[in-house]
Image (cartoon, rainbow, N blue to C red; front, side):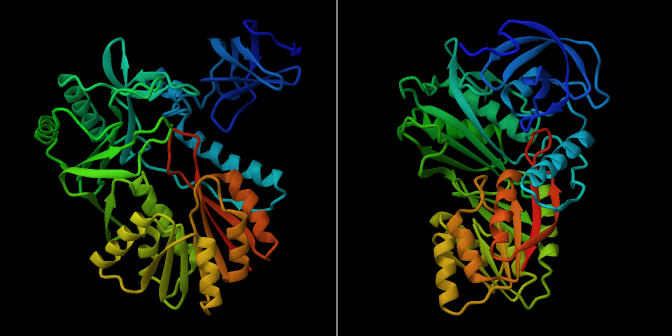
Length: 452
């Protein structure tokens, strides 16, 4: 058995020194870190050790002896338990500082000398999410909607999701009650049985159009007509009801096949003067007001004058491409998801934007083909998923040699790694602008410009 300075079930009095990336308090006993839920730096607390591993352990607060000036009254334990709002006990200005420091610390580790500017935060950092993906499970013989307890698949029933548009919260309850009324079986992960896996709801921030997606294990939906009538009667904003088919025993929420049960197969919303059609499987930023802040800043950082050729890698349904096309000579978007490219082309058409061209494919392969065909790019726009840029993509960017790379990142760790890799091709960054897209959570987006 591994000996650690503390043992499970031990009671201790500790000082909280720091916060982890996930927003857990950190206390050290003889250099051994303990991670503690709902604890803030500067607080002295009595704790109970609940788990010890070789390198670190976990504990919970039994009594707070001193309170941080940055602590705010919590509205519900379930928000930290589930990870919906792991920072909701930390005052909003302190959340922004915490996020900036995350980026600074990762830069320091990566030996990067880049100035991190103050975060661009929200005036009202609650109820901002325009999309919800809510698991459906049976608890004590009753269908429930809620969220998983952290690091488990144990559902905690929740009705008010705190950071979601309140109209979305209301819609989930309407759908939940209809599923209960018609005795539709909830999904059971243990044996891949039952029917309703998730309820997904999207709501247009400007349009107020609502899309309800029922994620099911089988195509046959009992009482389909009655459920549709019930939803549309109670929720007049609903313009689209879609069924998504996901039969596999998997953690992936959405399956690849959908069918429209009612209304349109897309939702309409607006962003920076453009109208967008958003289908059930398409990616669309979840914080509409901060997306406008993010994209406006990205266009400014790109320094577009109307004469530039821009490549938008990971172009999705064209949100950044169409925004940039209004300020550039020509924009080329590349995206691996065919449905997203279809949406992007349609979105260009409905907005009358002709100086943009979308291609299906892997960005690294398509960019090399464009370069070989003689295309020269002034600006390369990248907004990759959390895993950051593939090495093959960085090689392709080095081969393409754009004058400027505008890197929109949702993960400071992979951003720091990628800046170092791009340095091998002569690219350097001087400042990073954090934009808080996800208040009450540990996540931070940022914009970094690299020039050759």
